[in-house]
Length: 112
Image (cartoon, rainbow, N blue to C red):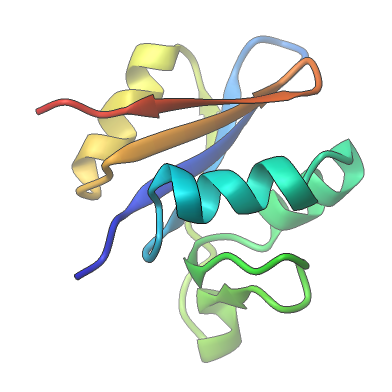
């Protein structure tokens, strides 16, 4: 069974950009990979530009993006508030939201 999540970045204009991740969205999965391997803002921007993914790898190149299978990009852009970001996660059955801001990854477990 999948543990879905959204991976997001808070932009300079206070909006959010996010992508969907289908598998391993829990803290010990996606959370750990983000905190250990995605600390460079350019790498995070590259990850987000590639769109939704089945699973997150330690490298952008190793990540299984849906576009590799010819599917849509599925990037959530210009999300105005954190509440809207959480709602976007709920709409895809997400259980966690990860947000990069000011050099730190923060996580939020979604309650239904």
